[in-house]
Amino acid sequence: MNTPTTPDAPDTPDTPPLTALRLDPLSRDDPDRLGDYRLIGRLASGGMGRLYLARSTADGSLAAVKTLLARGGIGEVERRRFAREVGLARRVRGEHTARVLAADPEAARPWMAIRYIPAPSLAELVASRGTADEACVRRLGASCAAVLLDLHEGGIVHRDLKPQNMLLPNAGLRLIDFGISHAVDVTRTHLTLGTIAFTSPEQARGEPSTAASDVYSLGATLFHLAVGRPPYPETGSDLRLLALVARAQVDPADLPAGLRELILPCLALEPDDRPRTADLLGAFTEPGRAPGLPNAAELRIPDGWRVLIDAYEREGRQLAAVGPHFARPTIVTAPPRPPSPAQPAATRADRTMPEPASPGRPGDRHDRRPGEPGDVPRRFAGLSATGWRAAAKAGTALTVLVVYALLLLAVLAVVVAIVVAVARE
Image (cartoon, rainbow, N blue to C red; front, side, top):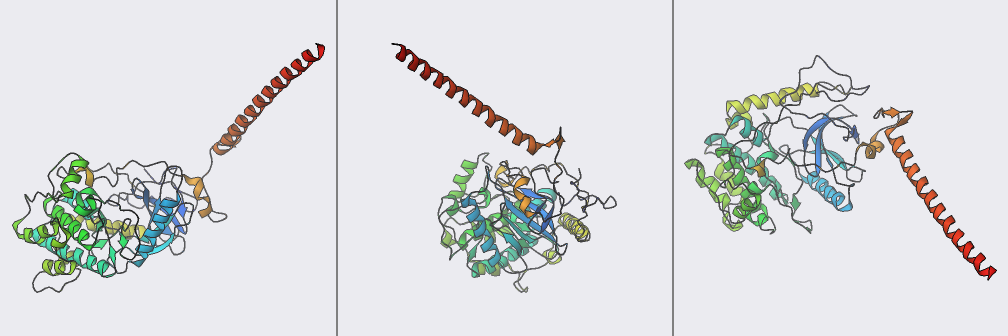
């Protein structure tokens, strides 16, 4: 299925279909553009927002654009949370995170554009290509710890560390999605629970989270990379899983012996019993190697992982090469991949969560520049759908007015009759 095209976005039939990136075509309730970014397709959807692949109208560069959805419109609470997320994301520095390019939290549909990284997540790599060996898990652990150390030294706690939020391009690990992060100098009035299988016990109990909470989530993530499942027995119930997490009741079966002394301390019940981020970086760094962030070649990733990583990057280059003329490649909507049998439902919710009704395209008309094409309305008997809705509302209002007028006349008639009767007596 192809994405809708516009006059300045012709089809490119000679371009091979995109399959690794798994872009979903834009639907009728998606905007054509947000700010200075023209949307190409959906990267992901969740209960409160959508993530689009977009192209800058200024220089043709690619970006991932996140926007909010809310039933009945965007309220002030959602808008404040989004503005806070934008502010925190702008504080995150370094090449191993997704840099914010532009944002407008005050728009009718708030949005934020971040650097697009054409790479699979660790969750996708495990689900479709299998687990990593011990050496790869160690080096990925060192990479994760290095990125976390930069965040924690800057006073930021991620709070939603999980395989879905870690991308792996050939250049090395990238950490994304700071949607529920917080800074230690920002007053918080509420807590948000991350994905249950990778959250910390204190978060599961509704207690404040700290850098030690990220350490726990890192341990759960590395366990998943090595074993293919989170560190808990299968429960079939989110509530039972939440109870296991709150007690840190992990199931270490199948975890390789060489990784137990590194991963299990991260999964300690009490935050003070877990290693500090700096100590964790030293523990995962192999003797003779300088602490740092290795690229994919140095990670010794499985061959199956490399095939998928290369496919993502190849298709990313293909998209980038289209240039600033907004030609859209053919997008193939692949059937959903079957979930990993060992992966609980709580970790597969990112692309399958039910979505609330969107405000729709009309709310984004302010984002279009004068003269740019918008949606072509469907017409019947000379009126578009919007015109027919307006006519229906006008007809309803007129009917109500006529009914009220008739009732008033009836009341007046009764009053006159009574007055006449009294006068005759």
